[in-house]
Image (cartoon, rainbow, N blue to C red; front, side, top):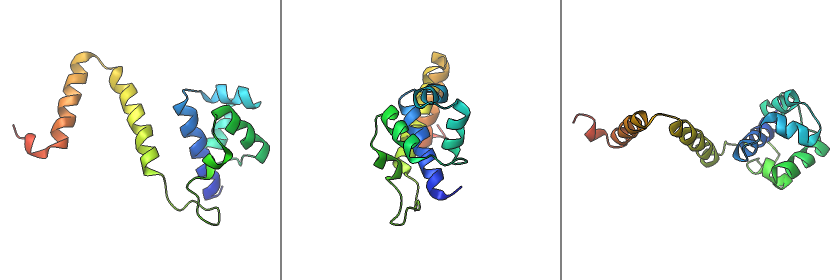
Amino acid sequence: MTEIDLLVGTRIRRRRRELGMTQRDLGDEIGVRFQQIQKYETGRNRVSASKLWKIAQSLDVPISYFFAHAGDRGVARHADPAAEMETEARELATAFLSLPAEHRRALLSLARAIRRPEAIGR
């Protein structure tokens, strides 16, 4: 596994989740089992050019999407913090909406207090 394999896998996972697709959904579309998608997403297996093409079509992104944050020599230099934050925010929103109303209010109060440390002692 190389850094670029991991970067490509991370981008596949991120986009698949953005679209609300399961690993099985994506696997069915490109002709592999969901276990292979797992291996692609973790970087454990490299994605061939033809499979990456099919994945890009299924996820409605250009091939360049998978390499957007790669360095000049094809090695990932840094993560994409904004995209990671978007993913976390989406996961947080999904979890938040599944809570009972009283828990949502309590969690919102906690988040506001953490955002303003001076309010914690009140």
